[in-house]
Length: 369
Image 1 (cartoon, helix red, strand yellow):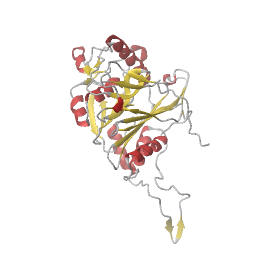
Image 2 (cartoon, one colour):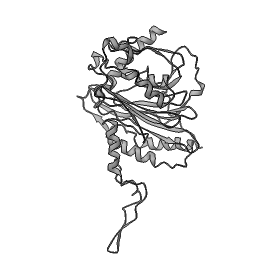
Image 3 (cartoon, rainbow, N blue to C red):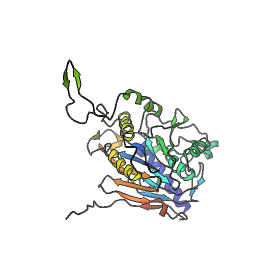
Image 4 (cartoon, rainbow, N blue to C red):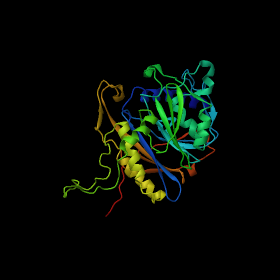
């Protein structure tokens, strides 16, 4: 089993490098909502121009995980044994999580950051203290229960620059968002070869630019409000808004990362504080719908390898919502509107291998008559 896993992780590194390396248009968005009755709801979209073939993937406790070292080979990096069971969405059918949650309610994901992600310079002699960038989330969820533990743990490891020659000699340029059961949020980036960890007061994360720049940009929208506007009165004459919906007028609606960040900040903070956890789950789906990319809205030229060399259409391949109080992880795939649910409390914690669940299900409807 161990040999088989090592082989799979090697393939994973290659596939992930291909999927993430040259791309600037991958458009993931994530946020956090608080339930009035306790607990938090995490939501995120996964956009891509290449089929990720994601499956719901489950790692048990006490499972051997070989770290990918500076040479790109599994086992030459920092090897570890999972402390917690984890479940989430993998990439290309292989055992590396792009998004997920652990049994302690720590939840989060990897988001593309091709313009800013530069990992630490790790020598061959220090390879055993490092892991590949695509392993960051798997490492965090399988080892830590809280954001504070993650902060301490990531100061003890390095993220190396291991690459795959067949895929442009690039690392997977990602950043990580994490939220724990107490509602603490953290963003982990590697900028100019340095680890940067930032407490996230908004609970929101998208892609480039660097996260601090995203936070600073919020001030540009200081006058934005979700409250409907009264008519403007000039010399006794009223000028009413052209229609209802004047609240949040000026909210950016395009797919650029800074625009999506601002949109996610204002939509998530506008969710009623009185909403229960169940209501916030429903709210999360509605907010996520505003980031859904209809097929064809973002098209890539034939010269862009992101489109497979022959043009491509970026879509929202899947959308995830997680309830970190009740340990429920929900997924909606691109192919249909069904919501599928996975209960982490029902994991076989002592399993001896990784388990995969296919989410390729036909569209279903509830009959009215």
